[in-house]
Image 1 (cartoon, rainbow, N blue to C red):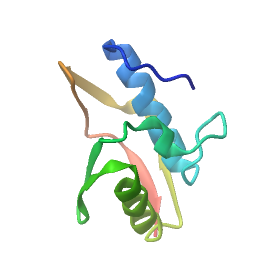
Image 2 (cartoon, one colour; image 1 turned 60 degrees about the vertical axis):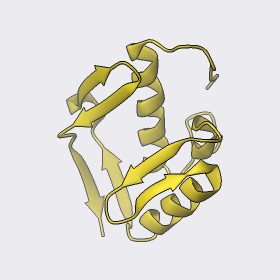
Image 3 (cartoon, rainbow, N blue to C red; image 1 turned 45 degrees about the vertical axis):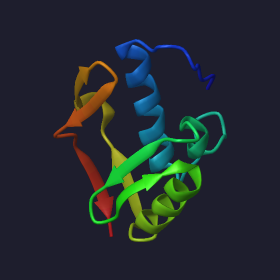
Length: 101
């Protein structure tokens, strides 16, 4: 997946978010075989409940490892997502997923 450093449209943001969720479902491997961390800027921040805020690719990778270690499998149901955009902020509200612990 080619990434851009220019301003993105809502559809482009959605595309990156879906690729992220697909990679999360595939143990951190993107659809083109890359790392989920390739989807993040070096100074990115990610929040995950019960973990907190991870800053930077190294800390984000550690967070994903910690969270992933608690799951046997996870599957997101992308067509049922409700997307909300406000400038550079994106949220996926009430998205359905299935986790096997």
